[in-house]
Length: 265
Image 1 (cartoon, rainbow, N blue to C red):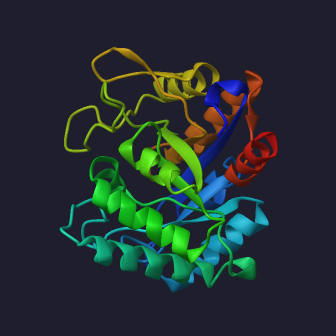
Image 2: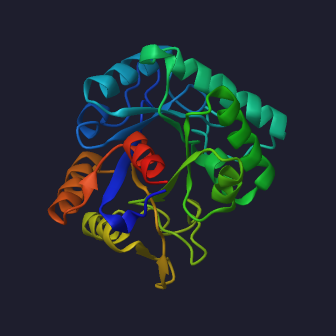
């Protein structure tokens, strides 16, 4: 797969996280700046109406559509860990992919990126990572697996010969090992806009990031994620994209990055 420091990168965001009469985030504005959308599939947020609406929003803006499956945890927004068996994880992910694909043109998705606690568990738990990878692979061999760059999860996905996009976060702190700092710890979410933009630029142009302890570590990735519910998310999205493009970085979708990698293989 491409390296973030080669001049091309995907820009993704978690959207579609509204529910019933409650509208969350700034989807209609953020979608103008991203190239791939991770759309909530009903287990942590979202519902059929919002899924349909968000898919149309992405299609109308030429943005790649991805499922954002989670643990069945509406009350905790999918950020609480759950002791599911690998089989239960496999089935939960399959169910949510199928739900979103039903709203997608040609019943196809570009990618799958787990949400919250399910994502974080996959980073550290090989059995959960394996269950997710196998569910996505069985659903559609062409689907792109979005994984945390450098994680055990990435290695497991690659061992199955699937399409992989390595992800990093614009607004999340990382440990010296390259994992996300838990949200329960101070400083886990970076709120300073200038710092978020600078980190994104460094990731995209140098393949490096400053860990929470101040250590600079290698962190090559193919996609940068911005949370759609972050304070000032629209302004951040515009600033990040503008900064990257000014530096000569091409912002492109995951599918195009994968296609280019296959063509160069």
